[in-house]
Length: 583
Ligand SMILES: Cc1ncc(C[n+]2csc(CCOP(=O)(O)OP(=O)(O)O)c2C)c(N)n1
Image 1 (cartoon, protein in one colour):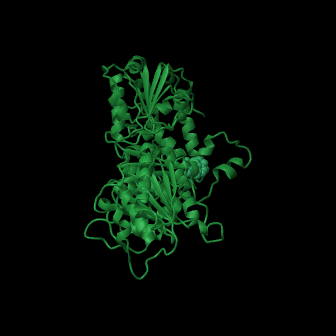
Image 2: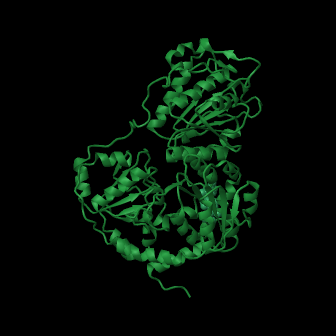
Image 3: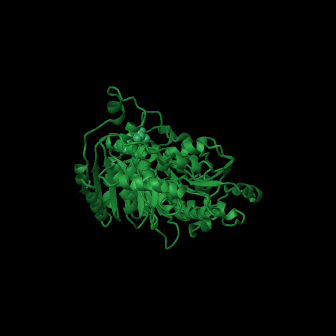
C-alpha cells in the first residue's frame, strides 16, 4: 500500500508502522538481502506488506515457523547471502529457535525480524504476548529491541541500527535478531499517510541505492587474521603431514585444498561436507579403512596435521586425530570457533582456505610419502562387494554416484553412511548437512530452501524419524521449481541406536530409543501431491531415482528391516579387519 515515486523510496505509506517496515527492508536489500521468508500473522503485517511490495525481494512462505527457520537456513547457505525472516509475536518466534541455534553454529547469516507488542502490552494478559527481548539468548551474534515506530525518532536511527547489525554479521557470521514492536494500526486505513517530511532528512538516501552508513561488507573480512607464516610454515611443511577437510561450503576453495595436498604430497582425508569427498585425489574410504591396522599404521606415520573446516562426521578419524602424538596441528576456518573437540590444535588460523593458501610462501612440489592408496584399495573393493544389495548401504552407495546438483544429507545414519560409501566422481556434487547441532529437525525445510537457490536437482536423504519430525514441510515441496527427490530410509525408527551402547535387555532400546512407529509415507506423498515410489530392489531404486532427477518432486521410500544396517556395518567392519565371517 505504498505509492512509489517516479524513482526512489516511496513517500506515501499505509501507516507510520509501514514507513519503518519499508525503511528496514529497503536497507536490508541495499546490504545484500534478496530473499525474505514469512509466516502468517497479524502483528507482523507492516513487515509482511513491506516485503511483499518490495520489487526486488523474493518472498517465500511457510505456515510453520520451525520449518520456516530451516528453510531460510537452506536459502542462506545455498545463495551465500543473508536471509530475512519475518514472524508474528509469541510462540511463532520461539519456533525459530532450532534453526537459529544451527545457524549460529554454522555461521549462517539469518536476520530474524520478529514482530512484537509495545512494552505496555506485555505482562498484562494481552493476547499472544511473550517477552521476546533477546529470546535467542546466546545463540545470536546481535540482538536489538527496537522501540515502536515514532515520528520523534529519526529514520537515520533505524537505518544505522541495521547497518551496524549487518556489519557485526560480516565480522562474525551468524543469526541476528531485531525485535520490532508495533502499536496499532497494523493494517491500512482508507487513505495513505504522507511521510515526506519525516523522510526528508534522509536526503540522498531516498534516491540512492547505497546503505545509509558505510560499514565493511562483502569481501572485506576484517576478522581474517593470517600471521606472517614464512618461518612457521617452512618448519611445518618439512614434516610428514596429513590434510583433513571438514565442513567447507565452497567448492572452489575446497579444490584449492586438493591442489595444496597434491603439491605437498600429503594425503587428503576429506569429509562428505568438504565438497571434495568424491574427488579422485581423496582417500575416499578412509573412515572404513581405519578398521584396517595396516592402513591406520601407515596413517600414523604423519607428524603434522593441517585441517580445513571442522565438525568431522567420522568418529574413527576423530579418534585417530585425538590419539596421534602430533608434532603440530594447524586448523584453518573463517569462523572464530574452536572446532577442536580433542584440544589438539596448536595454531588456529581464522581465515578462509583460499586466503590461507594465498598467504603461504612458495613451496616446491613433493612426491607423495604414503602407501595409503594401495592399502585403501582393499577397503574400496570390500565396499563395492557389500553394497550390491537392496539395503541402506546399497542405496547410499548408489546415491553418491547417481546424485546430481545438490545433495542434502540428513543426520543420524544417512550422514554416517554417506561419509563412508560411494566412489570417486568426475563431476562435483555440492553437499550440505545440518551438522552444527546435528538435529533431526527441520531437514526437509532446509533441503527445500537449498533447492530454491539453484537451477539443478536437489536430493535429500534422511531417516524415517527425521522425516516424521518435519513432515509438514512436505507442504513446501510442491512449489519447487527444479526436480527435488526425497529419499526416506525407512527402517521403522531410529536404527542408529542399534549401534550405540544402549543396553539391549528388556524394552529399553525399543520403547525409549528406537521408537518403532510402523508408519509408511505413501499417504503423506499423496496428501502433499508428490510423486511416490517404493522400490524393492536396488535396480528398481536406481531406475526410480534416475527418473525422479528428471522432473517434479518425488518421495522415494526405501523400506528395510530395522536391524539390517547395523548388521551390514558390523560385517563390513569385520571384513576390513580381516576377521572370519560369522557362520
Ligand atoms: C531434534 C533432535 N532430537 C533428537 C535427536 C537425537 N537423535 C539422534 S538420531 C535419532 C534417531 C533418528 O532416527 P531416523 O531419522 O529414523 O534415522 P536412523 O537412526 O534410522 O538412521 C535421534 C532421536 C536429535 N539429534 N535431534
